[in-house]
Image 1 (tube, rainbow, N blue to C red):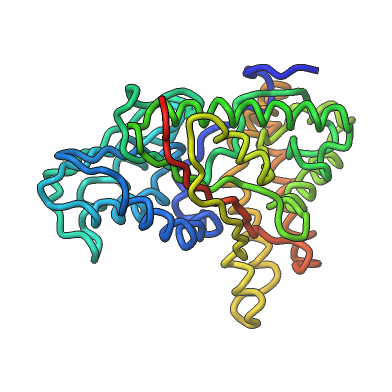
Image 2 (cartoon, one colour):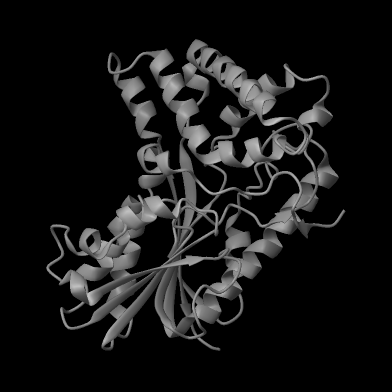
Length: 356
């Protein structure tokens, strides 16, 4: 079985405008990425202009903190050029109002002039170069590169293509993982081309949790099972795939094997902030927790799997099917909230471009 850049089911769709309000789990990544930015910025050469790219910016909510941190490390006379990359169909109207020269320079640590800060938007997949070769001092991608460009086949047993809980056919699972490795190689090659010699890439690469579970996996399986209970056969929803790849340490190292020096590679797992409210007791009820989990999951996955379903059934049927499935998910999660969470785990990597 071979992979292809897909126009079939399971093609990653951009986040919608409400992602900025529902990305609590993803926003915790900055806690661990910030020290890596600090170390990298100490050694990155600076001239009259510093250029940085955020690859996979989504709606911009998680972009401001890293960019403001970068700005705070530059002298006032150094112009800052920011390139925000995401798919052409991204909710760019949300980005325009979220990531601005003023939001980047107006933080407590920033005393730069907004007039010397420039923000550009690049509607292009991050599997391609998003700037001319050798132009960037720093590029980064904090919660994005798990989304694949390739499609290795329909998955009738689940949503997450590279997760063994969802993809039970060993051959199909391996095909997806092989495609994921090739995608990551394409991603790091594109970042390598963009950087100046000596420039840094900083990334948070999604991976299995310490106990071996895959992030968001059980929630996704509940949704798949709810959908399955409402259709005639698994084949009806087989193209309803979230093409995400969770990577091992070896997978990450392989992506930086040529032309790079890996300066840091750390594993960190972060508990879902909403789950912490549940565990405190009395802050939120199990039903409120379940609703928050489903809403957060929807903000990430709904555009992708709804788009896949719309290729096989009328949109009105898709809307009704998913609405009923979401309700079932809330009931299942509320009945046993300890089993479900939106914890996240990542390999945090810093790599220096050492050769062209």
